[in-house]
Amino acid sequence: MNHQRIRQLLAACLSLSVMTAAADSTLTLHPNEVSAQIEPHDRLDTQVRLPSLEVSLLARFKCPLDAAAHSITISVADSHRRYGPEEIADSDMLELSIEVPATQIGPVSLSSFCVAGTPMKEAFVLLHGVATAQVSLNCRNQLDASLHFASAALPLRLFCKADESQDSSVDK
Image (cartoon, rainbow, N blue to C red; front, side, top):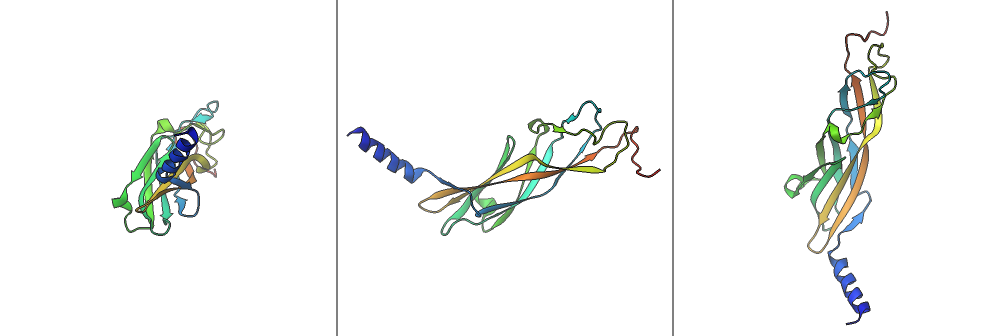
């Protein structure tokens, strides 16, 4: 057999077994707001470490004709969770949740929010894009499988834990 024929045969075999990937409306995500409380920080230390976060979002999905949802996987940072066929059977939506350890979340820059020894001007700060959820939907039928991907920036509402030196009253 010549090299050209071997390549063609290999390509044909691979095309039958490789899953296709698609980014379309087959999978849509609706993230829930994540909230966390942080300790007051020193004015000079603007990079603040976040605590562990409990992330959740609603995934709506519909596999192409004659295919069924086989699994959904969510990942945030280095954490991931898989939902198998028994958890998604006979459904077109699923509430996904995952715990993300503090060690997997980068610090955020907060210059004037939650500074120790200063009056609090805001009760919270809303941040977008601190973490992103990546979700994949695996659809299968008897002959084929396909993967569908979606991602969503997770809104994070940070609250400042009051300390004794902070004045939490707005009007005096």
